[in-house]
Image 1 (cartoon, rainbow, N blue to C red):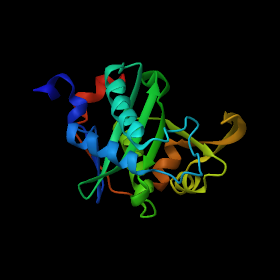
Image 2: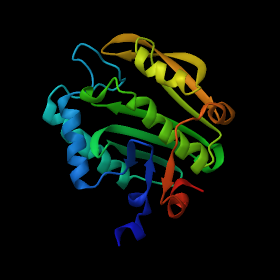
Image 3: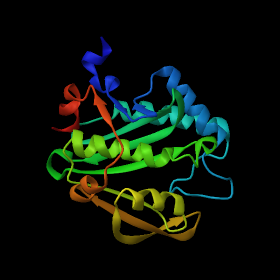
Length: 212
């Protein structure tokens, strides 16, 4: 079976209403359609690397991104782009990535959620799920993330989950300066605030792929 060669395909991270997994072909197509429908208003730019304005190009970029990440996976440098399913429906993506994780034990997260599914607490729950994978499943020591200072929704999710401010950095977006707020979550702060029930399935065969 393909999962014998690539066990990450069988990895599941589940909460009371969400399932996070590497998407199969049908789910990847659905994820691309969610991206095509839009993940933020046209007059906002919450990402340092803006998405294509054409919906079909956005959809294709999602598919190519997943193919690229699987093909480039190395134990010393990996990115796990998990499709997020809410009650069986694909609603967005939650990624976990790291470099030299076996030594540094530090992970980073990024995510996006279709506009039709925002405002329901899914963003917080899917981040809590992947943090459980990182800390409880992989033995991470810390997790870092970041968001533009004018992105209160993302910053609120991080604050709710126990992240602490970790400085700022200046970047360039569309030829103009922007300020990114960095945030860091220690293992102790995660353990103190983790309340979402999370179940990990199929993790053991994957550990060597994470550098463990």
